[in-house]
Length: 367
Image 1 (tube, one colour):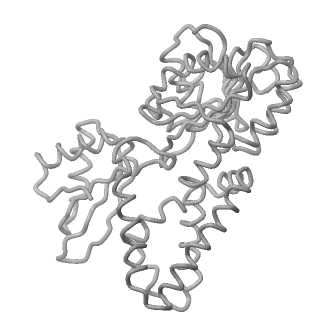
Image 2 (image 1 turned 60 degrees about the vertical axis):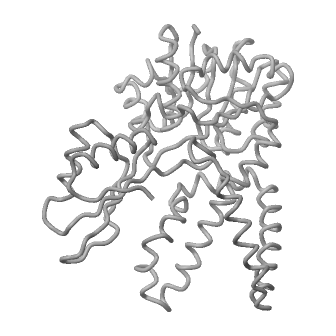
Image 3 (image 1 turned 90 degrees about the horizontal axis):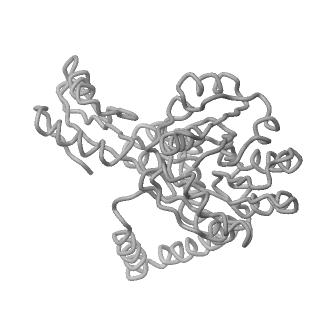
């Protein structure tokens, strides 16, 4: 593809899309804009973009593709600005937001002027943020949902796919309403549940001072997503308000059934509750990226002596295997601790596992 791409929002997602486009379409010009001047300068220095502009209108006027890689509520405001920016008639405008219905409805102001809008949602992320964490392979094998505004937009979906070919994502076309209902169940609602579980412990912390310590294992793992950006998730929750309310009602009703089974000591009902959940959960795909970014963890039993973590990290660094996080789950004098190493991709974890199995004297395992 040839032409000018205008990337609005130069964080992890916008930066990664820009890199993927530049790699696949070297003749295209990628211009960036971000609310933070430092991010724009960094994006240019890292060659994530070819140049940047401090004006949305100036960048938008020359663009053949405009990507809004910003929080949902900001995206809706920017769409209004673009409607009055004098865009090219053949331009494609898309976004990367986690909700689609409200954004696509807002894009009606673009449609009135003959501008094509195609909602987009790349289902990939990272534990890191900012343009410095951007990588062209971030979306590889991840689902990338596309929600055209109308038939005219649907006719340009293939053009958008061509622009985004370098992401190596798996594109799926959905309606905006279908998108929001699905991601509410597998992404948005789980974030509410994770946050509510953390609040449950936080509210009891004063009464049970040991809670925080004993919650460090499995509880910390199942509530990982509660550490996500609160502004982003407040925006998403408002954007998908009605679906989340419906799910809360449905979930509350299910929990009432569990409460009644507990109160009546109904073993068979409780057994079915756990057994049916296990059966369905075991059928879920093991590989691939979903609506919530996967955590690719490797565990190493380590003895308590100086430099043991550095030895392991040096082996990974020498093999050029990148990690996203490390954490020692437990260590006491003369007792083995568990080093948890997190990776960006399944491939990185696999390579690290093979390397450490071969070179490390410590036990290495997956969970």
